[in-house]
Figure: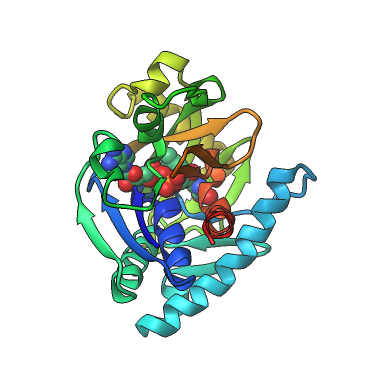
Length: 286
Ligand SMILES: Cc1cc2nc3c(=O)[nH]c(=O)nc-3n(C[C@H](O)[C@H](O)[C@H](O)COP(=O)(O)OP(=O)(O)OC[C@H]3O[C@@H](n4cnc5c(N)ncnc54)[C@H](O)[C@@H]3O)c2cc1C
């Protein structure tokens, strides 16, 4: 079976990898633009709540233990250079993990094509199945489908992150009130939080992801309240990313047309959920 995966964020990469391992031939289309995945903090923190999404999240985090061992062994990389444990949380070095996954899927024979897909019709003749893993671009690709109802339950939330150079390294992540203060691998510190949910109209056509000075100041001030030395830190950069959120609060895996499926993680746990999304996609397509 010849399958197209549209979107090379964490959902698309892990789904491609899982399909390949199940013996499918996959072509991965990547727009080449920064994705929510490339902007993430990489925290994998198990939730103790008992909702279906929390059980999936815990399962996904366990799967990351396996995936990281496999990536390290296949590519001869020390696991601690991209995967580490803080208590019961894990942290991914996001740029390294994305690079390793790219390498991995290419190594296993996936054709990776840098191309923005403007309409599903542009690829449908060449593939027996299409998986849309386009993150914030998913709604636009699915909008022309008949009976398309995604936008009723699917919005984008805006997350902003700042990176600081502290006077001394942060010993461990600090998480409180939806604020994440996280050490990076290079002695800098990232502070991230959601700052708004977009309207339905803006979710279909999001404004440019520009960091706002007032959000930078707020993140820095809240981070310094948790970790006082950050008041003395130097601001290095700020960025914004859009991540899908859904109602009900579950990752997306749905057949949306005769040979089209849509997949995505949600909210601030898209990395944690991605292994489950990939596994479920394989189950639907085999
Ligand atoms: C600031 C921030 C911090 C976060 N921190 C964490 C965290 O610590 N832990 C965690 O688990 N999650 C975190 N998340 C959430 C996580 O990053 C997302 O849920 C996850 O990355 C979504 O992955 P995805 O592959 O579904 O979508 P994306 O990463 O958005 O990937 C979609 C891909 O599709 C491409 N694309 C879009 N349209 C098209 C098209 N038409 N044709 C071709 N390609 C297309 C895009 O360029 C992109 O590469 C964070 C998110 C943000 C924004």
